[in-house]
Length: 415
Image (cartoon, rainbow, N blue to C red; front, side, top):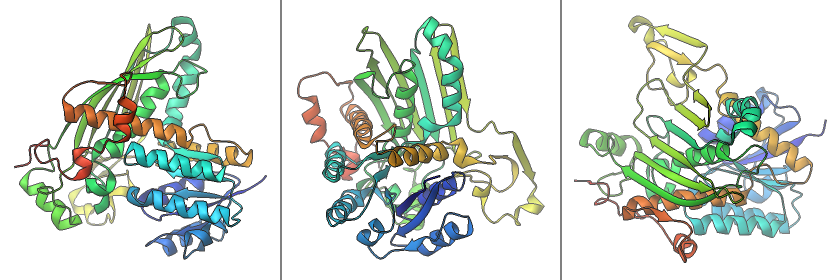
């Protein structure tokens, strides 16, 4: 079996999750890593878990010459710069077979467009990492309901919610670095997976055409004095000065270009879910059928009493973003597979070895960025954004939300 050697730019939380996912895949290695911190630990993990002799690199150029595909897993605010360095390495002869980028592709439409342009300059295949589309439960429901959809018609309404207690890193809380708050962080997931399941069976991911977006955002927990202080103390982020939304909800309307039928995708996201940990809830409704997914419905639960809780070193050994180490805890035995991280890397591996884009390429990532930014615009204006209106593409291309600019005190009602 041919092996794809992947190099990681970044060694933080998502890089560790992706490396864990790779341990479940044949014909793939983590061959190199370049990061400001955490490189040695990630390389050690790779070696101990059969992912190959991972080389710790001192530059992007060195990384590009020690792998077949580069995965950009670094913070959002440095991705354009990193992609530019990858382009220079390719021009200098780095023998790459593909480019990978973790969601979101860009903090703004203009940034995402620049990443697409840079990728095209290399003439290399691309993969956009949107794990929820690859969740085994999503795949299974599509396969199970395929005959029903063909008989009764496609789904008309999809709803997706992702919630947890908040990010791990300070830059992720800072809207000027991350590109927003929870809508930028997790709304991209919810919008993408709903769009995906609404497409008729056998159609590509962008078959349905977006026609309008509505949204609301709020700062409901992390704007309160106690929690603002916690953010400042723990991460150095001051929500009195540069607040971001911790709640977002909205609706995207799509149209079938073949018959004009309109369908809707509802999204809800928050950084306020202080229960077991990360929760994904999805459902889809069609004429005479439906599906539902709840990631917290695990076959395994454990109980830890007060006397035993001190022995638990890390709550997240049970579940990503877990906030408790005692009581009745939900445990997911294989989160990397549950959330789709395994399948998305299998797709990227197979695609690059065949010389083609993955199912989701960087152009797809650009489309998701457009929808997220349209949602910010809708919330900011307090009105539905008509994506078919003349000039809207140019408006979105030049748009940076007040939240991403760090100027949203009035919008988010920060006192």
